[in-house]
Length: 213
Image 1 (cartoon, rainbow, N blue to C red):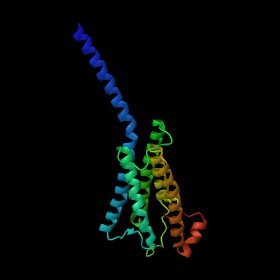
Image 2 (cartoon, one colour; image 1 turned 45 degrees about the vertical axis):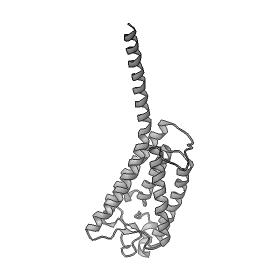
Image 3 (cartoon, rainbow, N blue to C red; image 1 turned 90 degrees about the vertical axis):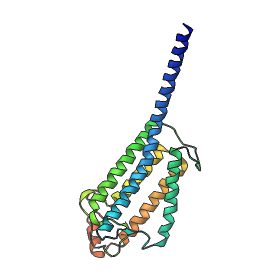
């Protein structure tokens, strides 16, 4: 009889432990999605650059206009580290979070997915005109089809959505600061790109013609 009781208690304890494990796994899923989002985002951009390179198109124009652009990669690497560290409990600069709500984290996942889909649509709409940086040698063409029929800078909108999604999953002050810095950086880049638009295309912009990001 005693053996039966002990066996029952062990089974009950095992069930509770298993249930707790499932709940913990479910609550951490958004964090893993956040990491996967960064990997997929970088993979999409680099894959497109390599595909264009095979076709003889130099899509990587990063830092050609302003060498201060090379200050950006170290901060991007730090951002990736912060997300990975938060997801896998690695050493972090700060572990304080403004709130801890699983529902909000899943909203963040939705923003991440939306950002990836918008990024993919943007890359497809760009065709062979996609560039990382400003291409002053081929600035005589505007993309007005696909997603560019609705937004002048869809890639930056996609990046902003991903930044917001990451913050909702990891709501700490550092990722919040990155949202502010990213918004400023996107605006700065848009102004720089528009400054290199040929005068004959500025009229189209004023009439509502979308401008490629």
